[in-house]
Each structure stands twice: as structure tokens, then as C-alpha cells.
Image (cartoon, rainbow, N blue to C red):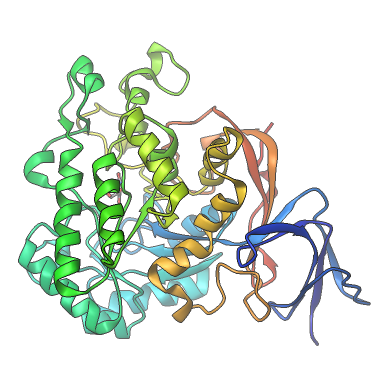
Length: 444
Ligand code: NCD
């Protein structure tokens, strides 16, 4: 029997119109079958969305699910539950697993496990090089045939320019992008934070912004030379954004993402913590790659997101075990567990009137889908179009809540904003018309 669900009373946000309107949405058998003003359907189950925004489910191009091999940090079940709580209905899984996702059998394993245990859609990203070592190309054709939606050695840059050139050429033939973690290791080696006055005062080794800018400039030159598509992961510096803006203006096939933390937090967090006290000095939860940058870089990230130079927001959800953060700053792992705080953190930009709610939702939904052409793999995601899968979120832009890392669905409790009040919450997340989050995520 056809299951029919009707969502009533919400402000429906369709990125196609870019506007929020009061409409009803009818879902039938896990797909959207109508979006219209006066929907009345006898016998349909009703979802009351009064006072809420109904938007397409968010799509994350950059999630570390850690499976296979690093399940002590995260696994497909816990990571996708965290995604669901954060409003993400599709996540792209990064290949820095153990072993690396550099061959078809690992991709098949991840897809099979995701089919069995994931709360949201999982799209795998294959490694560029064997073992992510940066020396020999992975079997990119096999990876594409196994269902990879892009290639990346994320966690490490593709340092060798000739290898990157070849990777771009192969990826282009396969119709896929290379996602590069842009960092020149000869400039950034051994760095544990951003190079600036904070690193000097703390006595920590810093990575200059130029380490990112130089790598982005090289990638743009290679994308231009090959005609291939390069996607810049977690962009964080003004110089990189200016290079991307100029590249796009010349017609280079370059797209980019930015994380919620690089849009809202600075390197001062390493010195002062989120609550401005001594107890969180040298907060290892603020240690992330690329590092939290200067206020000027944050401003450039926001401007780049607003004007479309940066195509989308991606979390770079990087969960780690407690012992990997409860140690000296030098020894701590890089990464922030970001899926569950992404929307609330980004809503700061909306409340501070730096970007509109429409832009924010666009950059979390259809923005990432367009950036990598994900519609080919999961038609209709990122939209509320008729015929699309019923992947949607109910959002309360004004709900106030306090981040409580201990209650995260993610195994990674590593966030530098634990205890911080946020305004803007994901109330419920549905995949294929089925609710996949749990409401207790909201505290206070
Ligand atoms: C990422 C991780 O832990 O996988 N960490 C991070 O700080 N972003 C990988 C990486 O990009 O270094």
C-alpha cells in the first residue's frame, strides 16, 4: 500500500525558487509527489511543521566515517547517526581509512555496510594514490566503476605535481573531480596551528597561510592546463579564495568548500578557548587541519561563501578518540567532530546578517550537489523537487541550545565549542520519508 505523508504549515524552502513560502508537501512511498499551496489528502499521515522551515536534507561532501579500520574513532552507524542529527541526509565518505579506500573491494565493503547500517545516504570518495602515499595512482577506473563520486587523498595533499596532473587527466576521462587537501608540506611541515601572533605567543609551530595559497594556485594551474575539475577541500585563507575567484573568472573548472569552523572561529580559540578562560588554553579540540585562521581569513571565507566563489559548506567531520585529544598539543590529532554543530554554528552568520538563510541552505543542499555533480549518483538530492527522494529537514532558525559533546551521536566528542550556546537547530531529519534523527540532541 502507498504510504502518504503530508507536511503542513512550514515555510517550505525550495532552492529552485530561493524563497521560503508557506506550502504543503506530499510524500508518497519515500518520494516527493507534490509541493503546492492547498494540499488536502485524506488518510495521509501529517507532519506538523508550523513555525519551522522545511528544507532539503543537507549534503556533506567531506565526512570522515573512519570505516574500515578506525572504528574506535567512528563507524558508519555512529557517523551517519551524527549526520542525521545534524540535518545531513547524504554524506560523502573520505578514503583516509585503514586501509585507505584505494581499491574497489574496500569501496564495495563500505557501500555494503552503509546499505546495512547507515542512517543516511553514503557516497564513497576513492583515494587518488595507492595507500594515499602520493607516489602511484590508485586504480581510478576501478574505483569509479565501484561507485566513487570523486577522488581525494584528503588528510594529505597530492604533493607531486606530475602525479596531480595525471590524476586530473584520468579523473577527467571518468567525468569525476579530484578533491585536493591543499597544503604545501614544505611550508607547513610540523605545524600544529596557524602561523600568526597567537602561535608566536603560545610558542607553537605555525603553518603560514601561503602553504594553502601556494597549493591552491598550483592546482588551479593544473586544472586549467588539463581542462579537468579540481575541487578545493576546506578552503581557509584569503589568498586561496582570491585565487579561486580569479580562476573561476577565467573559466577554470575549480569548485570549493568551506567548513563551519573556518567560517566562524579564529586561531585565538587555541589560546583562549571558547569560554575565554585559562582552563582551555592550548585546547587540543581547536587543533584542526587546515588550522583555525585569522579574523581576516574568516572574513574572506564568509565573503567567498556569500558571493558564490565558495560553492558549498562541508563539515570535514573528523572524529577522534578521547586519548587522541587528551594529551599535549603537539601530540594531539588534527580534527573537529562537526556534523552535529554545523547548522547551529553557521546560523551565527545568518543572525549576524552576514549571509541570508536562503544562501546558507543553498550552500548546504544544492550547492554541494552541483559542485560535484552528485545528481548523477542520487537523482534529486539537495532539492524538494517533485520526484526527488523525500530527504528533508525541519529547521528552527531561532531555537537556542547548548552544545553538549557528551551527548553527540558521533563517537568523536572532539569539539572546541562544547558548552557554547547556539541559535538555530535541526528539529528533525528524514531520509526517504523516514525520520532518522533523535530529538534529544537539543539541550536547553
Ligand atoms: C582530518 C582527519 O582527521 O581525518 N583531520 C582534520 O584536521 N581535518 C584529515 C585532515 O584533513 O587532516
